[in-house]
Figure 1 (cartoon, one colour):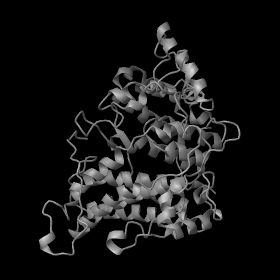
Figure 2: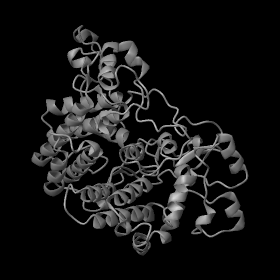
Figure 3: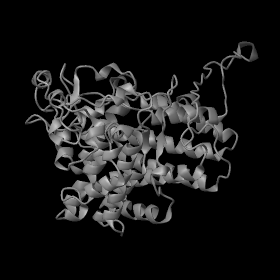
Figure 4: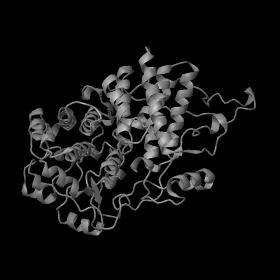
Length: 489
């Protein structure tokens, strides 16, 4: 992908237009070409990067204070994605006004992307009436049932693929694929598979056709064929275009690795560990080799943070690798990648949704992950060669064929998705745990892993009738973070 300067465009839309030309501000833009909006939409979606999900998914622990994510003590979530959706909707409006179907297609894709994240976070959400305040005066939108939201997401993704299939004009303002429509189609179809696999617990429901729709896409739609198809944002060392965690103060004294994550990689002798974190101070002082897995350890995620701090002071805990905060370019941010697609296909084959050799796709995913880190963490490239990947894939604790049954095969597939998601997957590994139970998340006895976030307080203040209706239909009127949503039942 070409490394280009990303122009971040901020659109100011006039709120007052009823007083004729005399009150028109020539500096306040009321319309623009969708290509300008696409640049900002892509940047916002692809550059999302936070440490919060890494605590919840047991990659990191905190030693200088109690993390609500680490100890599963969160309460309310945020509807901030609706702000991002406003720009997406504006791009769609501008594209429809000039009949630019390629931009309309990507608007449907990004709508699906954000609504997918919103419904996994909360359950029922405003969907069909959302974002219609300006156009239709709907300021208190009704909530759609989660099942209907998922159906809407899948319909929008199908529309996006069909529009791009018929489109001939390349996209301008595209900082991901430089206007390549086929690359976007592959991304959209891979994401369609991801959404359908997310619903694996509902695959037996009458009338859902989840397995059939998955099989249709897997056999008849363009999909990624290599890591070159990754939908990823490549950072450049330029103001406004650097890796999101560059110079982040959150990597100070209090952030350390989780012992359960390190144990998972050490058990498998996984050399990707060396790219994720440092050796412990004690191991460094002893001069242990980079590939000595005993040189790495983490803090217990179920222990009080003060206990973790004592272990850290004693030099017995690894920290996240310095590249995550010291490198302006570090690694690309993958929104949907070839490796994840291959693991999705492998799991579907194990489940019997489609035919094929699950191990082939599983192995392809692992090789793609090794190649990613060999490319973007060159200091450790020697540990991540194709030969190293093949040796790893053939080991007893990794080989898919060595798993004794289908459930253990799924466990290995999800674990590989989990490993490759370090600082990449945002909340995907957490939701995968909710869906499959893998990997196991260590926590205090009696503490249940939350299944959702409570609705924002603003909804109770500004949209009380509809939020109460949503709570009644889902949870009998009460709201807890341990409530199971439709997709998990």
